[in-house]
Figure 1: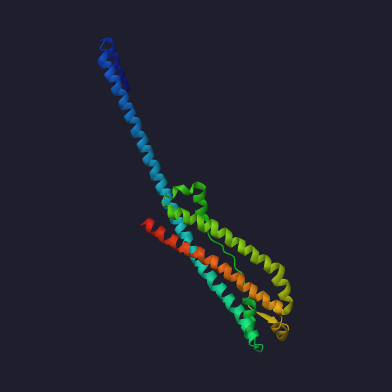
Figure 2: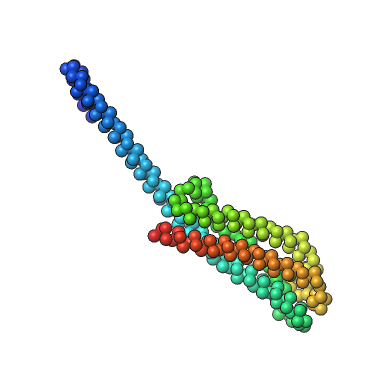
Length: 237
């Protein structure tokens, strides 16, 4: 094709047909420009296709992560509420001056339970590395960043404070008050003395308040997570 156009140009130059040669040259330039534009358009289209495929892949992976996250947080709420109920039951038993019953042992243990959120952020990390901008839906992009950024960071702060309180205050004071300790049962050494132990009762009240604040933030994150799951499902459809 190039040889064909070159031959036409040479013939026009030999025949001294300058005006026609100029028109031809302009036409050839236009054809080249059109060819470049078409090539760029095809390249852009291919790039858009790749980005759409990547976005769809990331959204599917985020959807899986959110579903796993929701299941884990449902479990967290269940166990945290059980711990709250046990702590409140012990305080109520002390307040009503109930006699010791070994059925309380499980509640002594549950009242001290802690929880640490372990969400799967693999898809979020991948999207963050490649660029969250590839997720075109603004709502999805903002919620993903919020769930794994702002909410998650503050939950981690609360967990850190909770862990420090347990390590520095709770366990050193409480463990000596019990004959044995495990995750399922704790038997008090002197139940009657324990009923009047204001420090022990104060610790239980602090744990209740700490868990309440923790669950409030988990619930905030959970609600956004459920909404994100709904929107991604709609987007993929």
